[in-house]
Amino acid sequence: MHLKPITHEGIPAALEKAERYRLLNDSSAAESICLDVLEIDPANQEALVSLLLSITDQFFEETSDNTRRAREVLPRLTDEYDRIYYAGIIAERRARAQLHRGALGASDVAAAGFREAMRSYERAEAIRPAANDEAILRWNTCVRMLARHERAPVDREYEPVLED
Image (cartoon, rainbow, N blue to C red; front, side, top):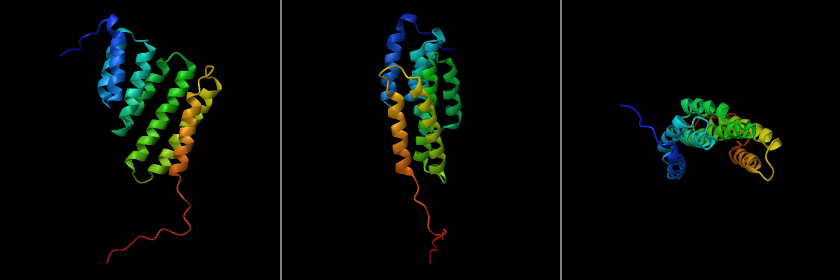
């Protein structure tokens, strides 16, 4: 089987549909739509951003391949601010997914991810367009997530509970 191309005139409606699928938590359908758009308009910035966000929406399912795929979109973004800002989004969403999984050491891994995101947001803030506070808002979210999930210092050594 082969993929059927969409029309160039159908791009705006397709991008609206991709956004709708993202809002309905059907990010794989949104990703597919973005790929269809990019087949006929490879430099479409709106489709690239939507693709990146659709991939990061899937981090809660599995992050390793999705992280790589999301990062591969970054160089295709033409605006430097967008490349830096969305690098932060990737790191932040990966960190959130780590917390969601709750595996051993997830808090430490997530904290490193939030700090990576914050470095990106700080760089984006320095070159942001006028009246664009997105990077500041995301920075503040990361600070709050770190505070909420910061582990309290342990005063004594770990002692396993033995069942009778």
